[in-house]
Image (cartoon, rainbow over all chains, first blue to last red; front, side, top):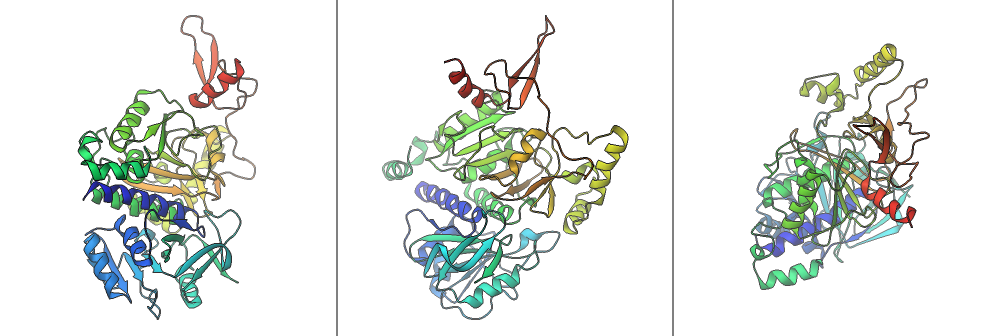
Length: 184
Length: 297
């Protein structure tokens, strides 16, 4: 892999790590614009041929992700990483991996493509590890049903999925399974 | 060197010219990606030990390879790195790790806690309060807190799964019955986020309260035992204690650092071989240096 890409992956992961350790805060990914490119960057820093990825509702993105990372296409129920496109309707978290009590880390990571992320306001209220008090997050382009499904998937800690949101402006925010979610 | 300078540089020349022939961050891409996936899961499940495929490093297992692999997987060219070994910036192990990372990632190094963006440490947490822009990477020899009471990994995994910690509590109780207090001096077990009993690495009791509701992300890497775990910022970390035997830290009442005069730091006791006299020095040398400058002014 060329050195520029290697260093960009380091920078991208660093931002992602900040976002995962501060649920609800919105961070700017280095050097990207557009939801698809953001998703590809995030996955590029994390996945390779060892990882099963299910891209739902965006065939073009599926091609991009597969081409850039060499990841294995997987059914949603087996996937380590789920990527949920903006136009994907329905409940995709129902059958996905939530880990076991012995190995909760086997739960999936879900990457949502959304329109815009905004911190400090909005109807999603987060508390728990990584949050000083409560944090508010507005996710434009994500139906409120999807948030309720995420709450249901994460209702039995340590089982659950960890959510990563990327938006059109190249920003990222996370809701790990340890977060308590309330919808105002 | 700043990120944009690196990227501009990369367009001009191949990376071998700059990082002494090593790829940026030393490890191969597959290794780094696996470590990153494990780190994210570790952060999302505070206190749970995520297994990972620990790689061979140019230092022996047990000498900080777990911490080193975490540092290398997340380092960026703009980072300022500090490495300490039992509080000391100048120990051979710390200096070698620092030189190595500086060579393969081109980062600047420092001994100033406030200035560093990543601090890799063995067995201490710096005295100065760290911020949310910093990451503390701890080297861990024995990641399993329950190993003291149960030798089987399958069994400790079950105990964690069911939050069945009665044997750990019994272990502490027996200590009190035998000795009148809990005799664990370092590796004091803690409960993270009200769920997992976790080994905070061999930090002294003095440092345990610093993990509670901190502003900083703590990442723990055990290279030999192949585990990564994390304590995110603003996470409840409670040392195990009984109502009638509460947790307490080391007591340095009446003792001060002979070098900087500090009365509020973790002190090392140094015995003079000839005279037999005892003196005390800050274990955190970076903090002591900072204080000495002001104290002697």
